[in-house]
Image (cartoon, rainbow, N blue to C red; front, side, top):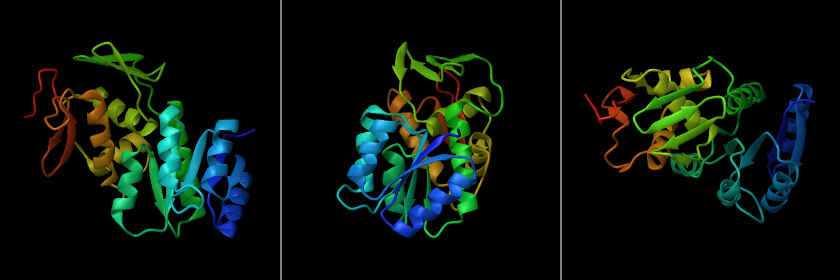
Length: 233
């Protein structure tokens, strides 16, 4: 049986279409029409990935995500019909790994699901088992990160970004290049989501996220991993 995907979406026709399509693509599927039911299914069945609509009855999607992130790192792709960028940014800040906006192509959705699952499972380029960069240590086999000996919980997307940067210290990545390297795709219009993931990553690994020493911004270009001493040139 394929990976289990939980679809939390209150639009019945859309939910059924997604469930049927994913079933034909080899996934095991679960569906919920409201936030409370979705959260219950997530905790009962431990799915491999969750598709989460933001506009839900009984319990808003952002609250579902907040509660999930309290005790789980399950990959989450946010689905939203809202046009405002702020809604997507809040979802990413709460720990969502990706987002799609309605209306969307089922084929593209499936590609994005597979990409997120690859990130969560460590697929793609085979890195060294363990890399240390100053006080930051990333173990690819265990999919763990430590900073000054302290264990840090990262989402699959945050782990993927750090993994790309730490394999190429000093190399500058544009947002689109970072999307392609970390996720296996680079869709224009989604590149700004990298800023939110980087901001979340900094909050977890930097002593002072407002003055980052490791994941630094190269203005007008993108990001790079600076030297352990905080080289930002």
